[in-house]
Image 1: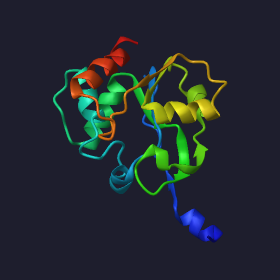
Image 2: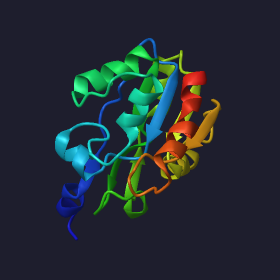
Image 3: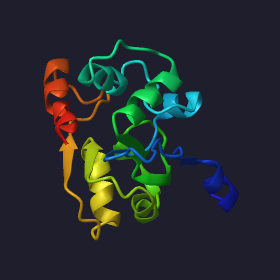
Image 4: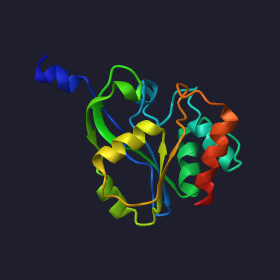
Length: 166
């Protein structure tokens, strides 16, 4: 495989959603194919992320991406991915190869109000542990909002409630 082919097969994460009010950081691994196509975090219609966020704050659901972003920011939530780039054939974290991390050190230094990190699934936590052993903020793994992570909706929502108590 030539170097050009390797570069062409790489995918890249999005810029973080965050502002001065951010106190909680939710980290995913890397946007899936539908999210990359739509240029929106958690764009797959079966991913429960946005449905969970709107439910946590008792806000009527909206498909408008700007409204989704605003709900996060108004509630002190920052959103980003552990990885900046990788190669991956599918949307599954288990297919990630040749990954490179985002600069979480710089991000956290520019968002000093963040006091807790939550991982959207075990994959994000695993890559965080691989690259960021020196970040000592309280953190917790939440069940993935991906449709591939099959636990009942009510169970996911109940576990995700913890972000509203930080």
